[in-house]
Image (cartoon, rainbow, N blue to C red):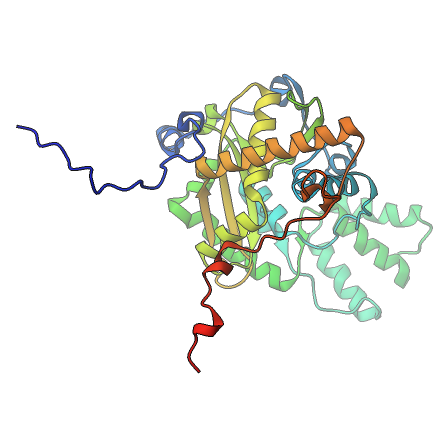
Length: 376
């Protein structure tokens, strides 16, 4: 005989799915593992075939940044206020393209082309304002160049009207050798990080990164129109791969961090709004390609000792929360355009309160001990 449970003392527990979405809308990690462990065969991704409801193309980052459309950075500004969004899209001053070495950019390119790990070098520590120092650099770069590169570099110097036997000419010659070289010069500190990065890339998870990145594409821009609002949108994920290669259509993000622990990195992801960005990447990529992008893989790179890697599979609940925030931001922006009004923090005030905001401190402030209860 079955005994019925006594529910008289039962209490309501935590909602298992508070966002009320279908987990089947998101890929399972097993879908990927089954495919990549079954075969090493990969197909080449055809970007033209993926341009179903928009454009998917390889282009320089500078061109992507100059194209007017709503990006994930603009969306995160919209979540602050419509005026933040307007300023970001129209009035901000670009700081210019960074010229220094970008570890994150190098990493996701090297994950696709592992030979890049062996093409990183450190230049001699010699001054370029002395004859001896300049000659040291000339000898160094000539040793890294074939005769065709050296001849081409010399021709470029002569076209500029410089004498290659003089200091200015030699400095330009060094510049041209570097520009045409397959090697990438980095600071000694970055070189040491890259040595550890290469080691961890090869060994992490028994080589899982090599399988995930096999056949993937990087430096690709997506341009489309949001179906709900009619606004132009764009994304440029660090990389992506498709189900024919790894069993799922996945966005791949690479993040550098100073976080010393897994928990601190996850906290940073929430603080920086990565869940909103990743949800937008999935939504826009899905709309443009007609493929269901429903997996996000994030690679964490520590920039401080011990320079560890970590590979994360994003939780559907977090992605769905990000999707709700993205949809809310897009609706906010759409309404602002319709009304031709982009309010700032006064948007947080109740209607009729003339922009005066009701102050609301964090919930924990109410749980503090009353100072009068503290014994002296």
